[in-house]
Image (cartoon, rainbow, N blue to C red; front, side, top):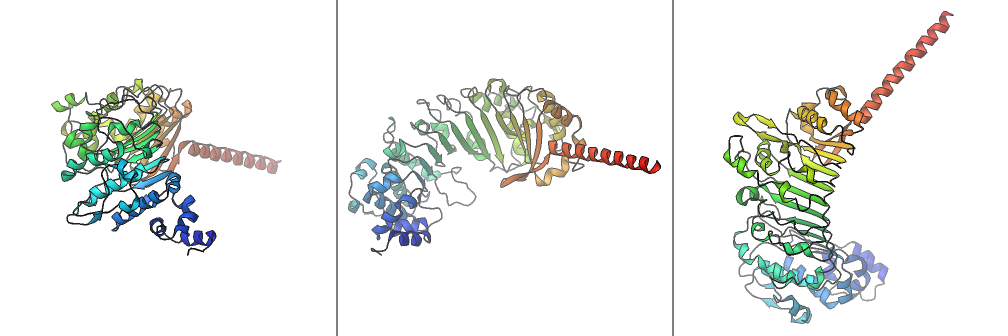
Length: 486
Protein backbone atom coordinates (compact mmCIF):
# COMPACT_ATOMS: atom_id res chain seq x y z
CA UNK A 1 0.00 0.00 0.00
CA UNK A 2 2.83 2.35 0.82
CA UNK A 3 4.30 2.04 -2.69
CA UNK A 4 1.09 2.33 -4.69
CA UNK A 5 1.13 5.22 -7.17
CA UNK A 6 -1.19 8.19 -6.65
CA UNK A 7 -3.62 7.31 -9.54
CA UNK A 8 -4.19 3.83 -8.11
CA UNK A 9 -4.85 5.26 -4.64
CA UNK A 10 -7.43 7.66 -6.08
CA UNK A 11 -9.19 4.81 -7.87
CA UNK A 12 -9.33 2.80 -4.64
CA UNK A 13 -10.57 5.86 -2.75
CA UNK A 14 -13.45 6.31 -5.20
CA UNK A 15 -14.94 3.00 -3.98
CA UNK A 16 -14.80 3.96 -0.31
CA UNK A 17 -17.21 6.11 1.63
CA UNK A 18 -15.92 9.40 2.93
CA UNK A 19 -15.79 8.25 6.54
CA UNK A 20 -14.16 4.93 5.68
CA UNK A 21 -11.53 6.88 3.85
CA UNK A 22 -10.96 9.18 6.84
CA UNK A 23 -10.35 6.13 9.01
CA UNK A 24 -8.18 4.48 6.36
CA UNK A 25 -5.99 7.56 6.13
CA UNK A 26 -4.89 7.00 9.72
CA UNK A 27 -3.08 3.78 8.80
CA UNK A 28 -2.07 4.61 5.22
CA UNK A 29 -0.38 8.00 5.05
CA UNK A 30 -0.25 7.77 1.26
CA UNK A 31 -4.04 8.02 1.26
CA UNK A 32 -3.77 11.38 2.97
CA UNK A 33 -1.14 12.55 0.52
CA UNK A 34 -3.12 11.35 -2.50
CA UNK A 35 -6.62 12.26 -1.49
CA UNK A 36 -6.47 15.26 0.79
CA UNK A 37 -6.98 17.79 -2.01
CA UNK A 38 -10.42 16.41 -2.84
CA UNK A 39 -11.56 13.98 -0.16
CA UNK A 40 -11.39 16.39 2.76
CA UNK A 41 -12.99 19.39 1.10
CA UNK A 42 -16.38 18.60 2.64
CA UNK A 43 -16.05 16.03 5.47
CA UNK A 44 -19.15 14.81 7.31
CA UNK A 45 -18.26 14.03 10.94
CA UNK A 46 -19.94 11.77 11.77
CA UNK A 47 -22.94 11.11 9.52
CA UNK A 48 -26.33 10.63 11.22
CA UNK A 49 -27.55 7.18 12.26
CA UNK A 50 -24.09 5.66 12.68
CA UNK A 51 -23.27 3.42 15.63
CA UNK A 52 -19.52 4.08 15.82
CA UNK A 53 -19.98 7.83 16.13
CA UNK A 54 -17.41 8.54 18.85
CA UNK A 55 -14.65 6.66 17.06
CA UNK A 56 -15.28 8.49 13.79
CA UNK A 57 -15.24 11.92 15.39
CA UNK A 58 -12.14 11.06 17.38
CA UNK A 59 -10.32 9.66 14.34
CA UNK A 60 -11.07 12.74 12.28
CA UNK A 61 -9.76 14.98 15.05
CA UNK A 62 -6.53 13.01 15.25
CA UNK A 63 -6.18 13.21 11.47
CA UNK A 64 -6.30 17.01 11.37
CA UNK A 65 -4.07 17.31 14.45
CA UNK A 66 -1.49 15.11 12.72
CA UNK A 67 -1.65 17.10 9.51
CA UNK A 68 -2.00 20.88 9.83
CA UNK A 69 -1.77 21.30 6.04
CA UNK A 70 -4.78 19.00 5.62
CA UNK A 71 -6.75 20.92 8.26
CA UNK A 72 -6.03 24.16 6.42
CA UNK A 73 -7.58 22.72 3.23
CA UNK A 74 -10.98 22.06 4.83
CA UNK A 75 -13.41 24.73 3.64
CA UNK A 76 -16.74 23.02 4.42
CA UNK A 77 -17.76 20.54 7.11
CA UNK A 78 -20.87 18.93 8.58
CA UNK A 79 -20.96 18.08 12.28
CA UNK A 80 -23.68 15.94 13.85
CA UNK A 81 -23.28 15.72 17.63
CA UNK A 82 -25.70 13.20 19.06
CA UNK A 83 -28.32 14.31 21.58
CA UNK A 84 -28.27 11.15 23.64
CA UNK A 85 -26.87 10.25 27.06
CA UNK A 86 -25.29 6.84 27.55
CA UNK A 87 -24.51 5.93 31.14
CA UNK A 88 -21.51 3.82 32.14
CA UNK A 89 -20.13 3.96 28.61
CA UNK A 90 -16.42 4.32 28.00
CA UNK A 91 -15.92 6.81 25.21
CA UNK A 92 -12.96 8.81 24.01
CA UNK A 93 -13.01 12.24 25.49
CA UNK A 94 -10.89 15.37 25.24
CA UNK A 95 -10.35 18.29 27.51
CA UNK A 96 -13.19 20.82 27.75
CA UNK A 97 -10.72 23.63 27.05
CA UNK A 98 -10.24 23.77 23.26
CA UNK A 99 -7.33 26.18 23.59
CA UNK A 100 -5.48 23.62 25.68
CA UNK A 101 -6.38 20.92 23.17
CA UNK A 102 -4.80 22.85 20.30
CA UNK A 103 -1.51 22.62 22.21
CA UNK A 104 -1.94 18.96 23.12
CA UNK A 105 -0.09 16.25 21.23
CA UNK A 106 -2.40 13.66 19.61
CA UNK A 107 -0.98 10.80 21.68
CA UNK A 108 -2.21 12.53 24.86
CA UNK A 109 -5.85 12.20 23.83
CA UNK A 110 -7.15 9.46 26.04
CA UNK A 111 -10.31 7.91 27.43
CA UNK A 112 -12.58 9.16 30.16
CA UNK A 113 -14.78 6.61 31.89
CA UNK A 114 -18.46 7.14 32.70
CA UNK A 115 -18.79 10.10 30.36
CA UNK A 116 -21.94 10.64 28.33
CA UNK A 117 -21.54 10.44 24.58
CA UNK A 118 -23.13 13.87 24.25
CA UNK A 119 -20.47 15.55 26.37
CA UNK A 120 -17.73 13.75 24.50
CA UNK A 121 -19.05 14.63 21.09
CA UNK A 122 -19.53 18.28 21.96
CA UNK A 123 -15.98 18.43 23.24
CA UNK A 124 -14.68 16.69 20.13
CA UNK A 125 -16.66 18.80 17.65
CA UNK A 126 -15.64 21.95 19.46
CA UNK A 127 -12.02 20.86 19.26
CA UNK A 128 -12.38 20.21 15.53
CA UNK A 129 -13.57 23.77 14.98
CA UNK A 130 -10.56 25.10 16.84
CA UNK A 131 -8.28 23.35 14.36
CA UNK A 132 -9.85 24.30 11.01
CA UNK A 133 -8.44 27.79 10.41
CA UNK A 134 -9.89 28.33 6.92
CA UNK A 135 -13.43 27.00 7.41
CA UNK A 136 -16.03 28.85 5.32
CA UNK A 137 -19.14 26.62 5.49
CA UNK A 138 -20.37 24.85 8.66
CA UNK A 139 -23.42 22.69 9.21
CA UNK A 140 -23.89 21.97 12.92
CA UNK A 141 -26.94 19.80 13.46
CA UNK A 142 -27.91 18.10 16.69
CA UNK A 143 -29.12 14.59 15.93
CA UNK A 144 -32.25 13.69 17.88
CA UNK A 145 -33.07 9.95 17.95
CA UNK A 146 -36.55 10.45 19.47
CA UNK A 147 -39.33 9.38 17.10
CA UNK A 148 -41.64 12.13 15.91
CA UNK A 149 -39.36 15.05 16.69
CA UNK A 150 -37.37 17.04 14.17
CA UNK A 151 -33.79 18.24 14.62
CA UNK A 152 -33.71 21.65 16.24
CA UNK A 153 -37.41 21.53 17.19
CA UNK A 154 -37.24 19.33 20.26
CA UNK A 155 -38.10 19.38 23.95
CA UNK A 156 -34.90 18.73 25.80
CA UNK A 157 -35.50 18.06 29.50
CA UNK A 158 -32.19 16.96 31.03
CA UNK A 159 -30.21 18.46 28.20
CA UNK A 160 -31.00 22.07 29.12
CA UNK A 161 -28.52 22.03 32.02
CA UNK A 162 -25.71 21.28 29.55
CA UNK A 163 -26.81 23.66 26.81
CA UNK A 164 -23.98 26.10 27.53
CA UNK A 165 -21.22 23.62 26.79
CA UNK A 166 -21.20 23.89 22.99
CA UNK A 167 -21.30 27.67 23.35
CA UNK A 168 -18.23 27.62 25.54
CA UNK A 169 -16.49 25.35 23.10
CA UNK A 170 -17.24 27.54 20.10
CA UNK A 171 -17.18 31.03 21.57
CA UNK A 172 -15.02 30.92 24.67
CA UNK A 173 -16.09 33.20 27.53
CA UNK A 174 -19.84 33.68 27.90
CA UNK A 175 -19.78 37.46 28.29
CA UNK A 176 -17.01 38.19 25.83
CA UNK A 177 -17.15 37.54 22.11
CA UNK A 178 -14.14 35.35 21.49
CA UNK A 179 -14.72 33.28 18.39
CA UNK A 180 -12.54 30.23 17.85
CA UNK A 181 -10.15 30.38 14.87
CA UNK A 182 -12.30 27.94 12.88
CA UNK A 183 -15.21 30.39 12.81
CA UNK A 184 -13.55 33.70 12.02
CA UNK A 185 -13.61 33.09 8.26
CA UNK A 186 -17.04 31.45 8.23
CA UNK A 187 -19.38 32.65 5.45
CA UNK A 188 -22.22 30.11 5.72
CA UNK A 189 -23.59 28.61 8.93
CA UNK A 190 -26.47 26.14 9.27
CA UNK A 191 -27.53 25.37 12.85
CA UNK A 192 -30.23 23.19 14.30
CA UNK A 193 -28.70 23.32 17.75
CA UNK A 194 -31.00 23.43 20.77
CA UNK A 195 -30.85 27.16 21.23
CA UNK A 196 -30.15 30.31 19.26
CA UNK A 197 -27.42 32.61 20.47
CA UNK A 198 -27.29 36.21 19.28
CA UNK A 199 -23.49 36.09 19.04
CA UNK A 200 -23.79 33.52 16.24
CA UNK A 201 -25.11 36.33 14.06
CA UNK A 202 -21.98 38.44 14.56
CA UNK A 203 -19.33 36.24 13.03
CA UNK A 204 -17.23 38.81 11.16
CA UNK A 205 -17.55 37.35 7.63
CA UNK A 206 -20.88 35.53 7.89
CA UNK A 207 -23.21 36.03 4.91
CA UNK A 208 -25.75 33.19 5.31
CA UNK A 209 -27.36 31.76 8.47
CA UNK A 210 -29.91 28.97 8.87
CA UNK A 211 -31.14 28.48 12.43
CA UNK A 212 -33.69 26.21 14.04
CA UNK A 213 -34.91 27.33 17.43
CA UNK A 214 -37.31 26.45 20.22
CA UNK A 215 -38.22 27.67 23.69
CA UNK A 216 -34.65 28.45 24.73
CA UNK A 217 -34.62 31.30 22.24
CA UNK A 218 -36.90 33.16 24.66
CA UNK A 219 -34.00 33.54 27.07
CA UNK A 220 -31.24 34.33 24.60
CA UNK A 221 -32.39 35.89 21.35
CA UNK A 222 -33.39 39.26 22.80
CA UNK A 223 -29.76 40.05 23.51
CA UNK A 224 -28.67 42.54 20.90
CA UNK A 225 -24.89 42.67 21.12
CA UNK A 226 -23.70 44.35 17.94
CA UNK A 227 -23.97 44.58 14.17
CA UNK A 228 -24.29 41.56 11.91
CA UNK A 229 -22.90 41.17 8.36
CA UNK A 230 -25.55 38.57 7.43
CA UNK A 231 -27.30 39.07 4.09
CA UNK A 232 -29.44 35.92 3.94
CA UNK A 233 -31.18 34.23 6.87
CA UNK A 234 -33.53 31.25 7.17
CA UNK A 235 -35.27 30.59 10.48
CA UNK A 236 -37.25 27.50 11.43
CA UNK A 237 -39.74 27.06 14.27
CA UNK A 238 -42.41 24.56 15.28
CA UNK A 239 -46.00 25.33 16.21
CA UNK A 240 -45.27 23.51 19.47
CA UNK A 241 -42.92 26.34 20.43
CA UNK A 242 -45.48 28.87 19.25
CA UNK A 243 -48.15 27.53 21.55
CA UNK A 244 -46.07 26.64 24.59
CA UNK A 245 -43.70 29.58 24.80
CA UNK A 246 -44.73 32.20 22.32
CA UNK A 247 -42.53 33.08 19.40
CA UNK A 248 -42.39 36.71 18.42
CA UNK A 249 -42.15 38.29 21.84
CA UNK A 250 -38.49 37.30 22.23
CA UNK A 251 -37.87 38.41 18.64
CA UNK A 252 -38.69 42.04 19.37
CA UNK A 253 -35.07 43.22 19.45
CA UNK A 254 -33.45 40.30 17.71
CA UNK A 255 -33.10 41.98 14.31
CA UNK A 256 -31.45 45.13 15.61
CA UNK A 257 -28.06 45.47 13.97
CA UNK A 258 -28.92 43.46 10.84
CA UNK A 259 -27.98 46.34 8.57
CA UNK A 260 -27.16 44.10 5.58
CA UNK A 261 -30.04 41.59 5.73
CA UNK A 262 -31.84 41.49 2.37
CA UNK A 263 -33.31 37.95 2.17
CA UNK A 264 -35.33 36.40 5.02
CA UNK A 265 -37.18 33.06 5.11
CA UNK A 266 -39.36 31.93 8.04
CA UNK A 267 -40.33 28.25 8.08
CA UNK A 268 -43.16 27.27 10.43
CA UNK A 269 -43.35 23.49 10.95
CA UNK A 270 -46.70 22.26 12.20
CA UNK A 271 -46.53 19.80 15.11
CA UNK A 272 -49.87 20.59 16.73
CA UNK A 273 -53.22 18.91 16.87
CA UNK A 274 -55.75 20.40 14.39
CA UNK A 275 -58.23 20.82 17.25
CA UNK A 276 -56.18 23.46 19.07
CA UNK A 277 -57.61 26.81 20.12
CA UNK A 278 -58.99 29.06 17.39
CA UNK A 279 -58.85 32.86 17.57
CA UNK A 280 -62.43 34.06 17.13
CA UNK A 281 -63.72 37.55 16.48
CA UNK A 282 -65.21 37.68 19.97
CA UNK A 283 -62.06 36.30 21.63
CA UNK A 284 -60.55 38.92 23.92
CA UNK A 285 -57.10 37.44 23.35
CA UNK A 286 -57.33 38.37 19.70
CA UNK A 287 -57.22 42.07 20.51
CA UNK A 288 -54.30 41.58 22.87
CA UNK A 289 -52.36 39.55 20.30
CA UNK A 290 -52.51 42.30 17.71
CA UNK A 291 -49.41 43.83 19.29
CA UNK A 292 -47.50 40.55 18.74
CA UNK A 293 -47.20 41.10 15.03
CA UNK A 294 -44.30 39.58 13.13
CA UNK A 295 -44.22 42.48 10.69
CA UNK A 296 -43.80 44.85 13.63
CA UNK A 297 -40.79 42.93 14.88
CA UNK A 298 -39.26 43.10 11.41
CA UNK A 299 -39.39 46.87 11.44
CA UNK A 300 -35.62 47.08 11.98
CA UNK A 301 -35.01 45.34 8.64
CA UNK A 302 -38.25 46.00 6.72
CA UNK A 303 -36.78 48.87 4.71
CA UNK A 304 -33.81 46.71 3.66
CA UNK A 305 -35.46 43.38 2.79
CA UNK A 306 -35.71 42.47 -0.88
CA UNK A 307 -37.11 38.96 -0.33
CA UNK A 308 -39.49 37.78 2.41
CA UNK A 309 -40.80 34.21 2.45
CA UNK A 310 -43.16 32.84 5.12
CA UNK A 311 -43.60 29.09 4.65
CA UNK A 312 -46.03 26.91 6.59
CA UNK A 313 -45.47 23.18 6.18
CA UNK A 314 -48.01 20.39 6.74
CA UNK A 315 -50.63 22.69 8.16
CA UNK A 316 -54.24 21.65 8.78
CA UNK A 317 -56.94 24.23 8.16
CA UNK A 318 -57.20 25.25 11.80
CA UNK A 319 -53.56 26.24 12.16
CA UNK A 320 -53.89 29.32 9.98
CA UNK A 321 -56.58 30.76 12.22
CA UNK A 322 -54.27 30.43 15.21
CA UNK A 323 -51.29 31.90 13.40
CA UNK A 324 -53.02 34.74 11.57
CA UNK A 325 -53.11 37.17 14.50
CA UNK A 326 -49.30 37.08 14.58
CA UNK A 327 -48.93 37.90 10.89
CA UNK A 328 -51.43 40.67 10.36
CA UNK A 329 -51.68 40.88 6.53
CA UNK A 330 -53.42 44.25 6.40
CA UNK A 331 -50.78 46.34 8.17
CA UNK A 332 -47.19 47.53 7.95
CA UNK A 333 -46.51 46.53 4.32
CA UNK A 334 -45.83 50.17 3.46
CA UNK A 335 -42.57 50.04 5.42
CA UNK A 336 -41.19 47.29 3.14
CA UNK A 337 -40.02 49.88 0.65
CA UNK A 338 -37.39 47.69 -1.10
CA UNK A 339 -39.26 44.36 -1.11
CA UNK A 340 -39.26 42.72 -4.55
CA UNK A 341 -40.32 39.16 -3.78
CA UNK A 342 -43.05 38.18 -1.28
CA UNK A 343 -44.13 34.59 -0.65
CA UNK A 344 -46.88 34.05 1.90
CA UNK A 345 -49.50 31.35 2.61
CA UNK A 346 -52.98 32.19 1.39
CA UNK A 347 -54.35 30.83 4.68
CA UNK A 348 -52.84 33.75 6.57
CA UNK A 349 -55.54 35.93 5.04
CA UNK A 350 -58.29 33.79 6.58
CA UNK A 351 -59.56 33.92 10.13
CA UNK A 352 -62.19 31.83 11.85
CA UNK A 353 -65.22 33.90 12.82
CA UNK A 354 -68.29 33.12 14.90
CA UNK A 355 -70.00 29.78 14.14
CA UNK A 356 -66.92 28.56 12.25
CA UNK A 357 -67.53 30.83 9.28
CA UNK A 358 -64.38 32.00 7.54
CA UNK A 359 -63.64 35.68 7.34
CA UNK A 360 -61.44 36.90 4.49
CA UNK A 361 -58.95 39.72 5.05
CA UNK A 362 -56.99 41.26 2.19
CA UNK A 363 -54.20 43.85 2.55
CA UNK A 364 -55.14 47.39 1.66
CA UNK A 365 -51.87 47.75 -0.23
CA UNK A 366 -48.71 45.85 -1.11
CA UNK A 367 -45.03 46.86 -0.99
CA UNK A 368 -44.46 49.63 -3.57
CA UNK A 369 -41.60 47.87 -5.43
CA UNK A 370 -43.06 44.36 -5.35
CA UNK A 371 -42.23 42.43 -8.54
CA UNK A 372 -43.33 38.89 -7.65
CA UNK A 373 -46.15 37.73 -5.38
CA UNK A 374 -46.27 34.02 -4.49
CA UNK A 375 -49.25 32.48 -2.71
CA UNK A 376 -49.04 29.00 -1.23
CA UNK A 377 -52.39 27.23 -0.94
CA UNK A 378 -51.84 23.98 0.92
CA UNK A 379 -55.44 23.30 1.90
CA UNK A 380 -58.85 23.21 0.20
CA UNK A 381 -60.57 26.57 0.35
CA UNK A 382 -63.33 27.33 -2.14
CA UNK A 383 -63.14 31.09 -1.55
CA UNK A 384 -59.83 31.46 -3.29
CA UNK A 385 -61.40 33.03 -6.38
CA UNK A 386 -62.92 35.73 -4.20
CA UNK A 387 -59.52 36.36 -2.68
CA UNK A 388 -57.86 36.55 -6.10
CA UNK A 389 -60.36 39.15 -7.31
CA UNK A 390 -59.73 41.24 -4.17
CA UNK A 391 -55.96 41.06 -4.64
CA UNK A 392 -56.23 41.98 -8.30
CA UNK A 393 -58.32 45.04 -7.43
CA UNK A 394 -55.45 46.29 -5.27
CA UNK A 395 -52.46 45.41 -7.42
CA UNK A 396 -53.67 45.40 -11.02
CA UNK A 397 -52.39 48.94 -11.38
CA UNK A 398 -49.15 48.15 -9.54
CA UNK A 399 -46.41 49.57 -11.75
CA UNK A 400 -43.64 47.17 -10.63
CA UNK A 401 -45.55 43.88 -10.38
CA UNK A 402 -44.60 41.39 -13.09
CA UNK A 403 -45.57 37.94 -11.79
CA UNK A 404 -48.13 36.20 -9.59
CA UNK A 405 -47.31 32.58 -8.79
CA UNK A 406 -49.89 30.40 -7.06
CA UNK A 407 -48.86 27.05 -5.56
CA UNK A 408 -51.62 24.51 -4.96
CA UNK A 409 -51.82 20.87 -3.95
CA UNK A 410 -52.79 18.36 -6.59
CA UNK A 411 -55.92 17.42 -4.63
CA UNK A 412 -57.15 21.00 -4.75
CA UNK A 413 -56.82 21.79 -8.44
CA UNK A 414 -60.38 20.75 -9.30
CA UNK A 415 -61.85 22.94 -6.57
CA UNK A 416 -61.15 26.19 -8.34
CA UNK A 417 -60.53 24.98 -11.88
CA UNK A 418 -64.14 24.12 -12.63
CA UNK A 419 -63.35 23.96 -16.33
CA UNK A 420 -59.70 22.90 -16.65
CA UNK A 421 -57.93 24.22 -19.72
CA UNK A 422 -59.93 27.39 -20.19
CA UNK A 423 -59.19 30.98 -19.25
CA UNK A 424 -62.77 32.08 -18.71
CA UNK A 425 -62.88 30.57 -15.21
CA UNK A 426 -61.02 33.60 -13.88
CA UNK A 427 -63.14 36.18 -15.65
CA UNK A 428 -62.33 39.81 -14.91
CA UNK A 429 -59.35 38.92 -12.72
CA UNK A 430 -57.37 37.59 -15.66
CA UNK A 431 -58.44 40.47 -17.91
CA UNK A 432 -57.17 43.04 -15.39
CA UNK A 433 -53.87 41.27 -14.90
CA UNK A 434 -53.38 40.90 -18.63
CA UNK A 435 -54.05 44.56 -19.20
CA UNK A 436 -51.50 45.45 -16.50
CA UNK A 437 -48.86 43.16 -18.02
CA UNK A 438 -48.83 40.77 -15.04
CA UNK A 439 -48.06 37.08 -15.64
CA UNK A 440 -50.23 34.59 -13.72
CA UNK A 441 -48.87 31.03 -13.35
CA UNK A 442 -50.40 28.17 -11.35
CA UNK A 443 -48.14 25.43 -9.98
CA UNK A 444 -49.25 22.12 -8.47
CA UNK A 445 -47.33 19.71 -6.28
CA UNK A 446 -46.29 19.18 -2.68
CA UNK A 447 -43.31 19.80 -0.41
CA UNK A 448 -41.12 17.73 -2.72
CA UNK A 449 -41.57 20.19 -5.56
CA UNK A 450 -44.01 21.96 -7.85
CA UNK A 451 -44.55 21.85 -11.60
CA UNK A 452 -46.38 24.44 -13.76
CA UNK A 453 -50.07 23.63 -14.16
CA UNK A 454 -51.41 26.65 -16.00
CA UNK A 455 -49.58 29.60 -17.50
CA UNK A 456 -52.40 31.92 -18.44
CA UNK A 457 -50.27 33.86 -20.90
CA UNK A 458 -49.53 30.65 -22.79
CA UNK A 459 -53.15 29.56 -22.64
CA UNK A 460 -54.30 32.90 -24.02
CA UNK A 461 -51.73 32.84 -26.82
CA UNK A 462 -52.82 29.33 -27.76
CA UNK A 463 -56.46 30.42 -27.74
CA UNK A 464 -55.68 33.44 -29.92
CA UNK A 465 -53.57 31.30 -32.25
CA UNK A 466 -56.36 28.76 -32.55
CA UNK A 467 -58.86 31.52 -33.23
CA UNK A 468 -56.56 33.06 -35.83
CA UNK A 469 -56.09 29.68 -37.47
CA UNK A 470 -59.85 29.13 -37.62
CA UNK A 471 -60.28 32.55 -39.21
CA UNK A 472 -57.60 31.79 -41.79
CA UNK A 473 -59.15 28.43 -42.62
CA UNK A 474 -62.54 30.08 -42.96
CA UNK A 475 -61.10 32.71 -45.32
CA UNK A 476 -59.36 30.06 -47.39
CA UNK A 477 -62.53 28.04 -47.60
CA UNK A 478 -64.48 31.09 -48.68
CA UNK A 479 -61.88 31.90 -51.34
CA UNK A 480 -61.94 28.36 -52.68
CA UNK A 481 -65.69 28.45 -52.83
CA UNK A 482 -65.55 31.73 -54.75
CA UNK A 483 -63.06 30.29 -57.25
CA UNK A 484 -65.21 27.23 -57.78
CA UNK A 485 -68.25 29.42 -58.42
CA UNK A 486 -66.37 31.45 -61.00
